[in-house]
Image 1 (tube, rainbow, N blue to C red):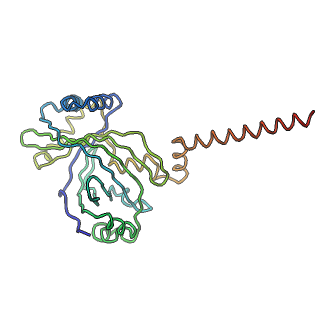
Image 2 (image 1 turned 45 degrees about the vertical axis):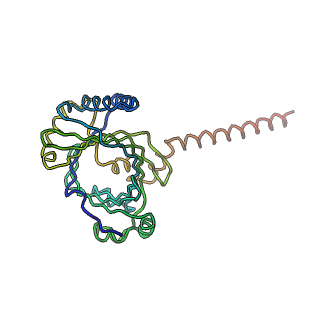
Image 3 (image 1 turned 180 degrees about the horizontal axis):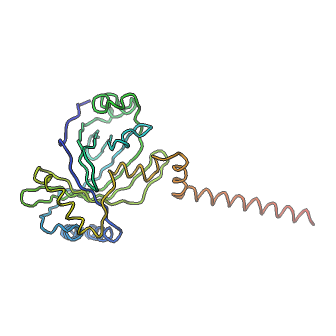
Length: 276
């Protein structure tokens, strides 16, 4: 397996989540298949009219997240992810440097794997990578805990030498253990692509506070929010209750009451016949 390489010394980004009304506006502009409409909507809702915004690409991304049984990575705001968006899967490790409201600074390392290498490594709980990059958990096994299926639209933002990537994510969570899936989620990320942008990103965040009537700052990474959504960080009974509340339980309740109704009907007929 190839050694992990540093993608960027420090990844610096802002994450915001649009409310329902803004989601509808964004979806409407996307479905119109008019790039100008999408950019106009993003500029208006984010208050970034002084930036030039150009479409970059659209990607279909599948992310599989791994962690230890006691969620050692989750509790240290770290990420161990297998990403599929091209020919080869990519193993990514992110570790937190600093976190503020809606803002993350993380180191990021990655390496490409063949499918055979991935199967071999995952069956052994990725011993080489864990030993070199995550020595604190080298005596623990990694388990597959969360899947995110994401359609990402990337745009390049520029202003006076500052370069950013604005990503519009529409994604769905899945719990591989229970089979439960989430409703479609939305998130907008603004990532600094050069030092000038990184130096200004905090100012952009504070400016956004004045215009984000249709957004809220995201709480943590996608992985952390997915863990909370499925109560994976909670007691087993809460996870079971969450799975039932997703509709599986309601279906079972309906089936149980249907069977009870049938039994009551049969008993009623039997009592009627006996009384004749």
